[in-house]
Length: 239
Image (cartoon, rainbow, N blue to C red; front, side):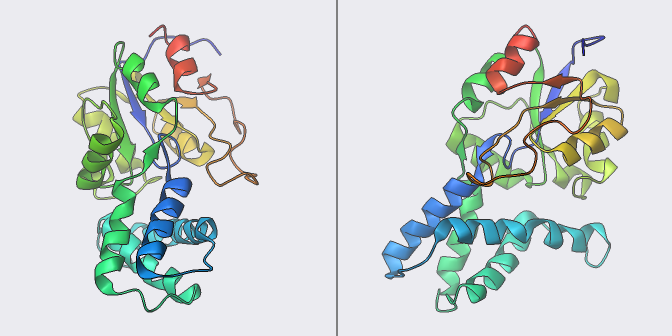
C-alpha cells in the first residue's frame, strides 16, 4: 500500500533480518570443533538448537520470573543446555564463554551493508534488537553496519515483543511512533510494532532457518511495505 508519509527513522530487527546467525554460529562451532578435536557434530543442527532456546529464555524475563539480564547471560545458559544435549559436556568453561561471544560476530546478509548505507541517506537508521548495546556495537564493527544509534532491549530493560522495546527506542529518537518504521523478517515482530503505532516493512529472509524454512516466508498481514531485500526497500523509499 502507498505510504502516507515517509518515515523519519528506520528501526531494524537484527538477528535473522540483518545478519545470518545460523551459518555464522555453525561456522564458529566447526572452528571450535577443529581446535578441540570434536568430530561428528552437525553444527547447523547445533545452531538451530541453540536458537530454539532464545524465546524460552527471554520469556523468563518477560514473564517476571527473573530480573532483566543481557543476551550474553541467556545465551551462555542456553549453551550449557545444548552442549549437554549434543554430548559435548567436556567443552571447558573458557571455550563456552568464547563460543557465547560468537553472537557478537555474526555475518551480514549480502545486501545488508549496501542497503543500510543507502537507507541512511534518507532516514535515521538504528537497530531495535533484543541484543544489548555491547553486542550490537561489536556486531556493527565487525559487519560494517552503519548505524546512527544503538537502540533496543537494553534501554527498555525488556525484550520484544514487549511494547516498551519499540516505544523507548522511538522516544530516544525524539519522534512519534507514526514517524518511525520497523523493518524485520519476522511477522510477529512487525505485528507488535504496528500495535505500538509504528510503520512496518517486511523483508523476508527465506533461509534464516536453513533450506527447509517454513515460517516468515511471506507477510501475514498488510504491512506498510514489503521488500525483497534492503536494496529493494531503499528503492521503495527513494533512497
